[in-house]
Amino acid sequence: MEIIILAWATLFGIVIGSFLNVCIYRIPKGLSILFPGSVCTKCNSKISWYDNIPILGYLILRGRCRNCKEKFSVRYIFIEFFTGLITFLFLYYLFFSGSKPLETVIVYILLTYILIVITFIDFDYLIVPNSLTYSGMIFVLVISVLIPGIFEYNNNQLGTQYVSIYYVTRWHSLFNCLIGIIVSGGIVFATAIIGRCILKKDVMGIGDVKLMCMSGGIIGWKLGIIVFFIAPFFGILMAIPVMLKKNTRMIPYAPFLSIAIIVSIFFEDYFLGIVDSYIEMFRYLF
Ligand SMILES: [Zn+2]
Image (tube, rainbow, N blue to C red):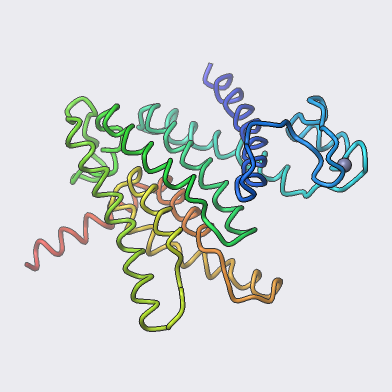
């Protein structure tokens, strides 16, 4: 049974990945993400449903438009595959083999979908769309009230010993969510301000702050701080090839924040242990 659910979820993820491709292409252009259906970006001919089947359609036509033979980027198929994979990993490791309730894991998966869209838009245009971060933030706040304790798993003082969601009030849940938003966004915002004062140029955009606000509401303030510290490592790893290739010094930062956010969720217990031991140390010192 577990295998069947995982297989369907992975397939669902691949289909969603196809939709994320549409979002990545259309949102920065201000186009509707629902209408019209997919068209070839070169000859504008409609892509019929059987050519638009994720991954398969791409493979059958060898990544070309049926009409004008324009080659589609291999990125489309990569995003479809990756979205399926990440859906599988979240469900398998956090829900089936982990200790997270389904509703929490679903929000993690939704967050990852938004992060995938933001990542590639930031790669292409060096922007983080407000429409995504603002609606994400509102969604996070609303869901924290509707399902009290859905994010408590990250915020309790005991680290790996989880608070049952049934013992958390709506106000408490909303409060923790707000703390996550303020701390996670605040730490990046402070860095942006300090960076501008010292280096006299923008080191981080305000879009990155909003991205961290949205995610901080979900992962909580402790993991928000962790993300802040581990994101630069992913940044350094990938910045060098980007700089060599594109000959530019502007580097999108949202992709590295996104990678760090996903990594922090998967290794949550480990990272929370680190934060908690620091808290203990400070308590002991002061
Ligand atoms: Zn075409």
